[in-house]
Amino acid sequence: MEAQDDDGAVWRCEADTLPLGRTAKFHLRQRGRSVEGFIVNVKGRFHAYVNRCPHAGTALDLWPNEFLTEDGRYLICSTHGAIFEQATGICVEGPCPGARLESLVVELDSGVLVVRWPS
Image 1 (cartoon, rainbow, N blue to C red):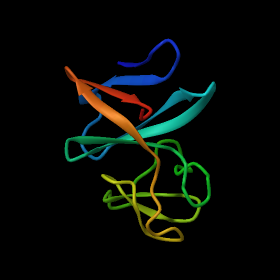
Image 2: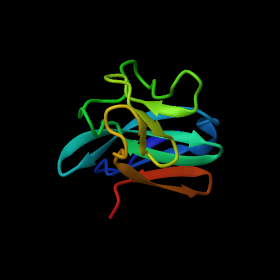
Image 3: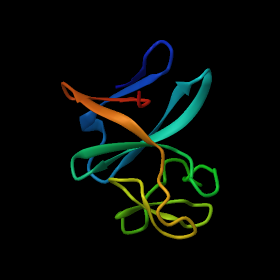
């Protein structure tokens, strides 16, 4: 089950549909426009980010929903190879060390993941 609320400001999905080490893309509305995001399951903890590189401003995934390095340990920007920690979104290698992906709020409510913009 994937769903958005009526205004598109919240995205929901069943947590068990996102296994360990997997990602999923979605859209949220912010100030009247649709913004793409993604969520990643890191050892049973879920982290969500706006799908935009802090260095280049491009989407991280060149191929749809391909956010992870080959070994699955990090997130990678397909445009220029910047490497980000999955749990923090901090760039640890590449052209923007110390920069951070824009985080989204993730809550787990009775087995349902709820993603929204920070307050």
